[in-house]
Image (cartoon, rainbow, N blue to C red):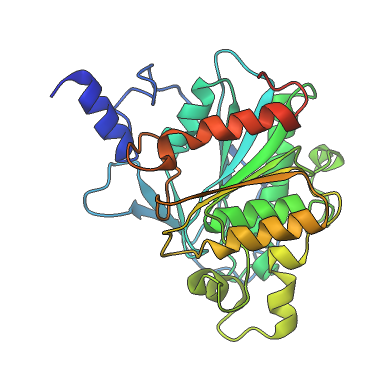
Length: 318
């Protein structure tokens, strides 16, 4: 097997050759920032213990699933040649776990290689006893966004991208940025939490049947939520007029989160006249966010996303 075949195979598996990033350059180091000074808000009744395990027996060593998150963090990768854009990246996991590498994995490195500052969020899960319940992940997203914006500097445009249930977290941040979900901690709270843009990829959107992702709904709002609870946490029912420009992408053959989630969100954005775009691919299934997918959209959706950013984000190179 030649070096190129080995590299492509490693990326497709979710991890590039050890020590190398997705483009073949040396894998860059990352910095981990704790979100909260001390315990996160609403921790009085939390008894879980944070742990990380390999997602499967054949997973690479850093392809992890985090359970019982009690120390939410932001893993920051800095590019050699910054393009003036920072991404808060939110992994998925059905609100049961957070599936990510400690440094954000191949996708974070891909964007860093393209000039983006990338902060990958490890967030708390709503069913672990946090006082905020379903809003615990949003608390972490708002706090992480402010810390990333402060770290990146005033000249940097900061957006959020999320995948699967992480798409629901990202969409919640984009739609509820003005909500005060926690008490002031420090001077970072003086920064706005409104992203300059949002990217939602094969996202969980609705909590309503028949298109709700059952696992995400159960873990977020319970086994038998009432109509008001369903409405409150269904993103397509809560789009504000000042929601940032939003990019959606999903595959028609997704058997985990129905593609109708993305279609419903796009229709809601259109009704509110929010600048938005959607790409529905015929194949790709669920989880095509990993670069190196030679048979689906994984190898070209970053180009589509960057092209869209060039039209909607001031200062983005085209």
